View 1 (cartoon, rainbow, N blue to C red):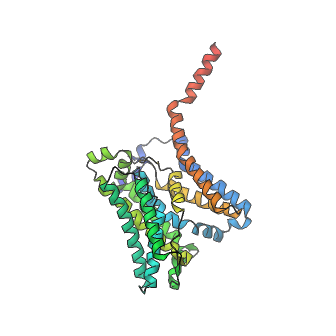
View 2: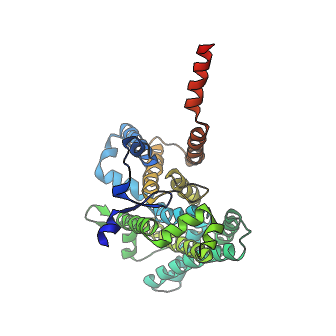
View 3: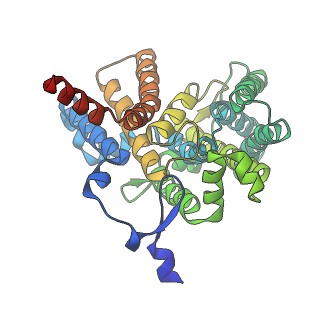
Length: 354
């Protein structure tokens, strides 16, 4: 049984094959999108090294990663949401509301561990609200619903704290954002474990296969006996929970909380998922590509910061990258369907014969 489990692999479209029976092709192996991401990542790091000779230092790379790993915490559950063919653009506002309520609870005398628990509970509740609305009103678009809750959650955070900030957290709390195990940041260890967990769930469990199935067709999945509402509700709730966890790490790194924290995070998070090869229409993608895309966009932002590019320009570049990431798979697919090379060769032959 164990040997059969090890032999099994799940492709990016969710289907299972026995690895030993699969016909290996070097060309198809190196044509995978993940290799393109590896190449882009190498190019970005070479450019960053040229811009700053000290960039290649191990400690500098760890510090650079610390800047975007709080987004990576949300990226992997977001991949599940997009695999469903849905989207959640309220995650940054959930982070803001979770961190604000955590800070206010601590300021009111609540012990810090309990205040952290409140942040996680608030994030989970916000994700559950998003999910239950979509389940109870399936005719509503997830983009419209989460756009609405994005405004609501951020608005509540702004009403509660206005323009003030809350800080003065215990010294041990800063270890979440700045602590290390040896030379490795704690947050990096957490993200690696999280990525491994979500990769296992997606590629080796029934829940992962049901997620792929729903992304391809919710109707067919429902008729196949999959409890589609339960799957959707669980995924959105888990995304809310990890948004709360990301809020705790961000508050630890910043040392304070404000209602305007994490503004614009949703753009980077969605871009990382889509650039990683998760189809925006759902049903296709994997965790490895998503993890590589986290590094690509994270180090791209860091490199642009080295040459003093403004945050507004960086947002434009990331937005353009998102459009390209969505367009490339569709363009590649349309070329394949058109069989353009065969048609062009045939046309040339006909011209020569005349």
